[in-house]
Image (tube, rainbow, N blue to C red; front, side, top):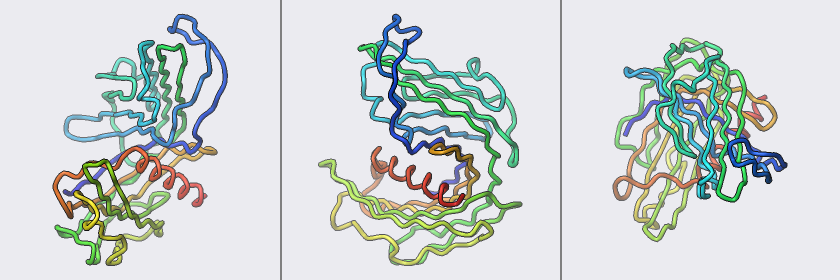
Length: 273
């Protein structure tokens, strides 16, 4: 499967902030206000022929709670109140249609607040705000398929200008029906002006003898970001290839693995400052 993404991730490395306060729209109940596990929070901008849609997802453990009290989304994007452009929502997912035009190099203001009210009167909140320059897009020359672990995997790309950071990721992910999983990953920050990268052969382990499903994934991502302490808003262009080494339709990595990847990316950005 070949895939090219144009995406904004909103990632925060800190795990929670505790405090007290009242909850509007929650019967006036009071209790601790906890910040959602932010390394599981994403804002995904999908631009295509049907227009621009923005998906906001929360993968935190909090989504397993009971939300009889309801939830609120407040979202401002590029200076526009998006409340009238909400197409559907749930406690851990919201989709918006953005009627404007986004171009590489544009500066975009992002402001988003999510409040979750559970049946016990506790409020969980997430607030994100920052300004980011839309990433310059890469035109990708992707590796020939199928990919194998013992081969060198070559990516090439062209861009009209460089973004702030580029990095590569390779992973071998195994999963079994008994809900057992394992993963081996290779990551590296590469020079911003580089336009070709070759993954070394055997840079990740072959897990096919240990699991019923094994998926190989290789990607190059070039991105812009806004960093404020533990908060990173990331806008990127990604070229990737994946291949089922064993089995078909390998289940996607679980929340713990996605959280670790996001935390790793935030650390890369902080080290780049």
